[in-house]
Amino acid sequence: MALDIDVSVIKRLSEGDQSAFRAVFEHYYPRVCEFVRRLVKSDALAEDVAQDIFVKVWERREIFGVEVRSFGNYIYVMSRNAALNALRRTGRISPYAEEQASLPSSDSMEEEYYAREKELLIRLVVCRMPEQRRRVFELSRYMGMDNQTIATTLNISKKTVENHLTLALRTLRAALASWIMLIF
Image (cartoon, rainbow, N blue to C red; front, side, top):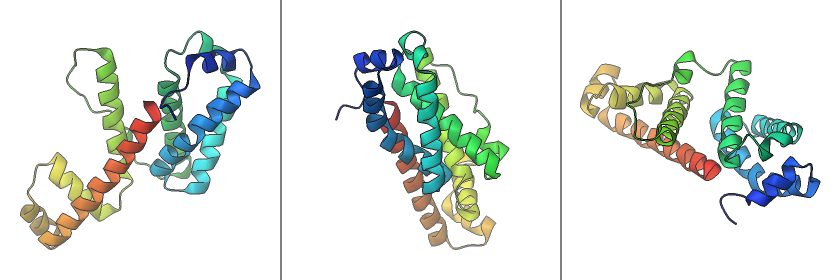
């Protein structure tokens, strides 16, 4: 299966072709569900959010023929925003996760856009980690502390710090892999 759907299918969708919508839905729904599930940590909520996204896709179908250059990017942004809104509604997100990091400018706007999106996703995933794992990750990656210093600061063993970092990085890799599959 190709990673991006054919432009002609998107054009037919924008014209109201239900079979094109079905093709788009079948292509993107599993990816959207998986991406949202990784953010909201709930299968049921992820399915509800994904279904709402595709209702909006159908309702806004006319814009895909004119205003939207990349359907994959559009569906990713919709998914991310819908997941953030679901987390806000359920009270399971902190303002820290929504904070956009200021990144150095890149040579192209597209690279900067992807860098900002990736940073926002990382912050969101880190915010959703269990408290101890999040603290260990933040001290290591954001504060630059070594494992022994973190262990001393948090009054835990160095091995526990290593385990938390391993699990945090595994979670981040999975979320980033899901993000990449969704937008490319």
